[in-house]
Image 1 (cartoon, rainbow, N blue to C red):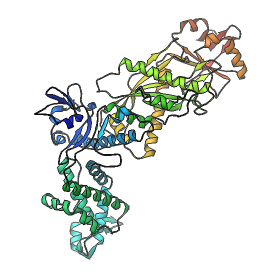
Image 2 (image 1 turned 120 degrees about the horizontal axis):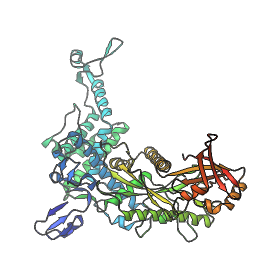
Image 3 (image 1 turned 90 degrees about the horizontal axis):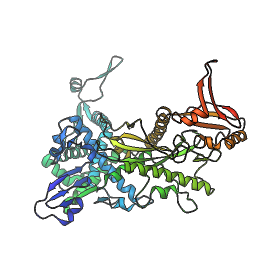
Image 4 (image 1 turned 30 degrees about the vertical axis):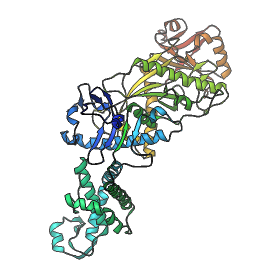
Length: 574
């Protein structure tokens, strides 16, 4: 976003933008409140297309003014954007708290974010969003409570008024009135709390442009009446402090008490501006994806002091974005580390080739650390296996890029993760050898950006863990699909009578099977062979898979100089 500078710029404000001559560029995204009336959100670039259009519908420049949500024509767009702004703000606060409490401080990330509040402090926007969230989460509870208390707190029931104004519910032909009319006994102290609550909600809606419906028959303080309420809000709350409230209303009482405390502070002193702004938003996106799919990496070190944790949080900035343990591709009884790199780009931008080279290097580094641990006689756990000493084959190492995009149909609940291309980047030293250490693949995925933001601030650990397991399984399945359908590899197995016979076979045919074979720890007498369709030398001279014309039977065998025809069966990755 660019703007003209009028007069002399305030040197203290230059942390919010960079200047070039008479122009300035806002190079941060986040939340800013001027302490009086204006709330500004600077959104990530993912919402703007190459035509400078917001959501492909609205001119970007039309939105750069006060109450920008009012310029958005479609109510449905305003509604989800209102939700997004709440999630977006909370995601910045979550990012701030995560990097400050990280075991390994990343200076580039800490300097990336500026905020007017400390870790345990809250902004006015925190209180606003808490009140709005309470309204959304307890709307029906409050409505039910209000109807019940109106009926139960009556001095005398006026049946003619009740019958004339209330539609009954019939139970076996008997009318039941869920609300009654009549004169009141005493004022309901709980209604005082709801009166204050709905008055504050109404003010937030009209003042800041929040979008939600208020459905209540209670009176609402507006205009000058609300100004008076703001002055005496704390006194009113104190007058009902000792009332018995349900747990939900206790929570509401505490939020309102904090809200009016902040109002009184603001009126007694000069308004303090609030902001949470981040310069390099891709680091926030990386942390969001890492919380979504990443595992707590092992701190177990090699003899030279290196661990997966130090590799992930490399202080030179060349970090592995995401790493998680998942069942191995060939044998689910073993496990392997999947690694991924999250990419925050405009929708029309592609991932550069330099990123591809770096990602292959990260995979090799993860391999090497695990091999070093093996050589040092230590291990992260019993399932992880990178190397088969019998065939000198290496477990297949999946790798991925993950790009955040806006969904076609706006939603926050579906990850909508999908494979962006059936093709995968491949790197190899010896071609057609999938079990070779240098044979590596990278797949491309896209994920619903809105889902990522909401998941980042979700406090439900069960839901987060379910999403994590689902995504881990998804990556594995999609990699297997690629190997089975697009890679031109076919897999075969030979189960020997005992591991020693298998080892004897490998000893005589080591050169022929190197990089093409693998034996898992789970089945030491099973040899897995991977044959590429274009590996013409191997297929023409040594390995045969054909239908015998005379018998009509399928023949699958490897022609061995010392063992004759060694027959194989199909092996399906699953």
